[in-house]
Amino acid sequence: MSLIPATILTGFLGSGKTTLLKRVLAEAHGQKIAVIENEFGEENIDSDILVSDTQEQIIQMSNGCICCTIREDLRATLQMLAAKKRKGLLEFERVVIETTGVADPGPVAQTFFMDDEIAESFLLDSILTLVDAKHAEAQLNDRQEARRQVGFADQIFISKSDLVSPEQLDDLMHRLKHMNPRAPQKAVHFGEVALSEVFDLRGFNLNAKLDIDPDFLKEDDHDHHHGHDHDDHTGHDHAPGEACNHPSHGHGHHHHHDDDVKSFVFKSERPFDPAKLEDFLSAIVNIYGPRMLRYKGVLYMKGTDRKVIFQGVHQLMGSDLGPQWAEGEARGSKMVFIGIDLPKDILLQGMEQSLV
Image (tube, rainbow, N blue to C red; front, side, top):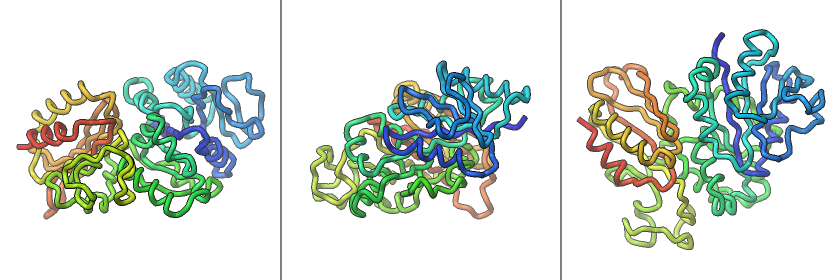
């Protein structure tokens, strides 16, 4: 049986998860989707699109989709679904997990890597994060869960963008880009999201290309490490290198907020020493793992002619051999770290010291 792709749908209360889900379920796409609601007393998938009463844990829908509400842990629910599929009792091609609006998607994502039985049946495709343009500023300022949801995202959909001015939308998009440069952002009306933008994004596929917005890197070329956060680039109206950690600065629209979820990028043209890099990353993950939301890179390693594709979530990390370096291709490493108050200097210095 081939692996069943799974999508994690997250976003703060009221961001439109249920609306998007209804649209995905109601559309005549011919796919059978199992929806797992990791619910927390929120509105569950509205009964108007369900066929049977909600006493059962598994509900068959009119278009052949199925729906379950987690009353136990996610692992048990996934195992049950996989077992029923194997026995031919349930028919579905993919799974969507809708987290509660206040959930940290990290532990949900980790379920797919920590449990061998789950890993043998499911493939985590991506984490989709919905952001409500109207309320995002307050939510991102006040709620760490909202910031973490952005940090984890493989794709960000911005809802309710028609309720804010173009400037407010632009500010929000800049802010999100600083928090997570890997995730493409799209302002959407949920009636119109193409399924190709929701499924098979391969955000967790180690062989997928590393998506870091090239313009994000361009802005900072004068900075030795090409790192990029609120503290280290010019163009502010305070001195370069001077910390900017009070949110009321009036400079440019990128920097109204010193969010605790930030990203920075390490780049080098020298190869890594595999043993040194492994030692360093193991030590870092041991200390900072809970604060490391996503880290992902394409690495140039001594001793192999192939790219090494690396990624991690919290304390879990893994690498795969990617394609060969092409003839004449400039070899180099590029790695993005997204996390909560990570010690940028220590990380960049440690990466530097792990080079050959």
